[in-house]
Image (cartoon, rainbow, N blue to C red):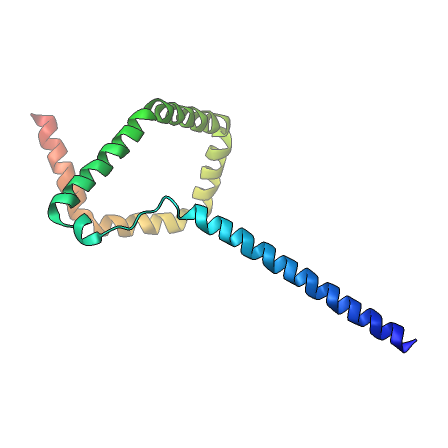
Length: 143
């Protein structure tokens, strides 16, 4: 009985080692495959040539030109997304107007004293700037 058990342990160990070897081979094969394709289009860059003053400005201009072309190609899409966002935001605010007003009212009630102190401190801190702006507005209104 113990010989059978020993034989089973040996077979199990052999199968496990075969499986381990198979996994390692697969890993190495896939790693080799990806590493070749990943770097095949890369070329070695000589930075001393790339960063000298003539090539540097030329490269920067080339990059800027490519970026401008990309933005110009997508201009309509960008404007469309911006307008959709504005509409979405506007509808959201219109739908939730009452909730916002209610929230603002409760917030002001809850923080009444703190807001009063904040406004007072703000006015004291920026008193000269505020008064100067008011004087300028009065001068403009008189003229």
